[in-house]
View 1 (cartoon, rainbow, N blue to C red):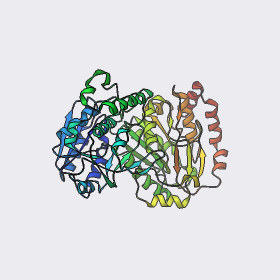
View 2 (view 1 turned 90 degrees about the vertical axis):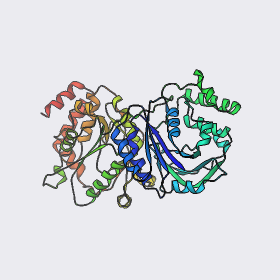
View 3 (view 1 turned 120 degrees about the vertical axis):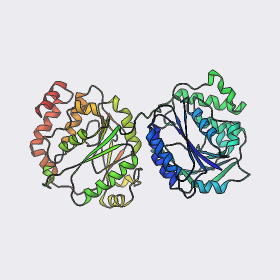
View 4 (view 1 turned 60 degrees about the vertical axis):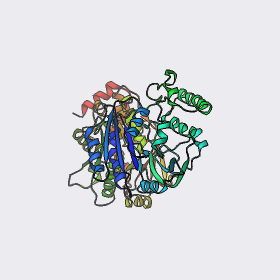
Amino acid sequence: MISLVTSFYNWYDRFLKQWTDAVLASTSFPDEIILLVSGPDYIIDNVNLAQERLGREVPCKIVFCKHEGMGHARNQAVEAASGDWIMHLNVDDVVTPNAIEDLRRAISNEVDMLVGDMEWIGHARFDGVKKYPLTLNDLMQGRTNDHAMYRKAIWKQSPYIEYSGDVDVAFWVGLAHLKVRIGYVAATLTRHFFRDDTVFGRYSKEDMREIRRMMLIWQKEGVHTARFEDPAYKIKGDYGFTHRTNMPQKQLSIIMAYRADGGIRDRHKRWIEKHFALMFPDAEIIIVKDSSKDVGWDTFNKSKLLNQGVAQSSGRVLFITDIDMVFIKNKILRAIELADQYSIVFPHDKIYFINESITNQILNTRPAARFPRIDLTLMRCKTRNERQAGGSYVITRENYYKAGGHDERFVGWGSEDSAFIKAASTMVDLPFLRMHGPALHLYHPLSKDRFMKRDTSTKGVLIEKYFDALDNKEKMSQLIQERK
């Protein structure tokens, strides 16, 4: 009997929908599912909906416990399971459709633990399927696949340890000391999503020293829970690295302006909207459509549409972007996390202009949460420095209004984003931040005289005023007041 268990806290219930979708897409279901909620920070509707959906196919049990750490939560989840085989899968990761079927087929009296391959998604350098034919020596050196399946009887001999370094590493090293028999399933069983706010994200120097020290102790003495009851080894703080995800449902609003053209921009809109919905299932997505009858781009008032979008939105944090821009998910998440510390955050510093052929390939594929896999070295690239124009940024609602919103006197292509960036970074008493990372600009036809039209219009005079008022709060305030 296979029990699929997960445990979560700190608003991680927001990932339950994608976790549940993946389980329900399986070719074979586990025999039971345990959802453990640790601590008070969750939305009960998310948990109840997951149980209702899963319960139609598999017995599904919800367990609540006081949050006393990650190891404690996992132990409570496994304790509640009745299966003799346990697969603990983080709630922000997913099983592949074949996973349970492949694992069930691989169960034998000759193995205590089954390990398969994992697909890494969102890693800066190592996207793709990773092979995990692990040995006991691999486990002793800290190389683990915490999505593996193990016998509950083995867990009872060496449960999860409430350890301040790495809960997963400590658990698997403990199993290695028991000399568990490892079976390797040569198939991709799980998908692991890298984000800046995941718990394995950033170790301090102190963490690394402690992990190395504890590895030496484990190798000499083995891992026993009793040792870690000693205050010297008790958990310290929040695992020693940044880990919080304090974004409740609907706290993020993604806002875009759009004018239909019956062609490529309509295709952008359909694909991008689904793409963001998959990346941020709990976000509020607002696309404000220009309803004017004039189809000329010279009359497109993007500023007005964005201001309308912000007025309609409810999120505390705003991600304002263009309908033809694609970003790496963990860059946006990191920008959201830092939004309170900066006046405005740009989740990229390079824009790759995707040609027509590759754009069509992207738009013809089913939208997904992942960054499109293309060879960026073949694409034209522009580097953005500091406060250069670029219509995609993360900002809190409070800071958006401190900047006066977008200046609706900018009509037609260009300059409105440059003016807003200058206003926000001047009026908000915080530094701005431009993060390192790529963004994709999907292809659409360009007007050859767009720069001339912008520079010779009244916008040319207006944007010069913003340049003149940059970093001068009094001047910028006066310029914002002129709009009225």
